Image (tube, rainbow, N blue to C red; front, side):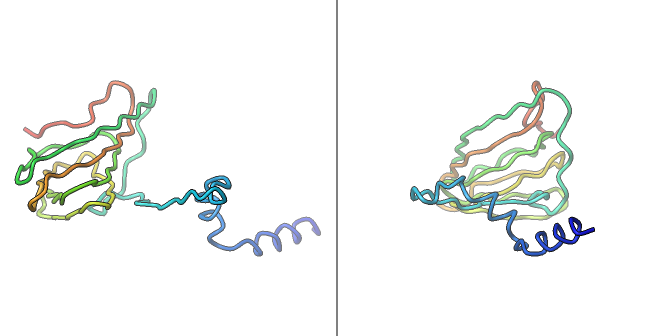
Length: 147
C-alpha cells in the first residue's frame, strides 16, 4: 500500500505538460543552441476529420518537394495515405467537394485529408513551394486522381 501511495504522489508531482516537454527537449540539444518549433500536431486533417489508422504492411515514407506555379489549380484528387506538408513559399488554397476551403501560407504546416477528394490552387503573386511527407505502406500510391 505504501508503494501505491508513493507512486501516486510522484505521478501527481509531474507537471501535466511533462510529456510534451520531454517530447520536445531535443535530448539536451537546447544546450547546444538547437531550437525546436512544432509546426503542426494533430490527429485530424485540415478539414477537421480524424485521420485513419496506418495501413498494414511494410512502412514506406516518401518526401516530395512540389512547386505549383501561381494561378495553377491542381485537379481533384485524393490521398490514400497519411501525409503532411510545410509551405516554404506562396499561398496554397485547398478545396473539398463539400465546399470547405482553407488557405496556408509560407511557414505554415498542414495535415492533409485522407481518402477525401479535394483540389488545391496556388493563389497570389508567388508560386507555391512546399515539402510533403507521406507515410504509407510500400507500393501504395500517394495521390489518386478523381474520375
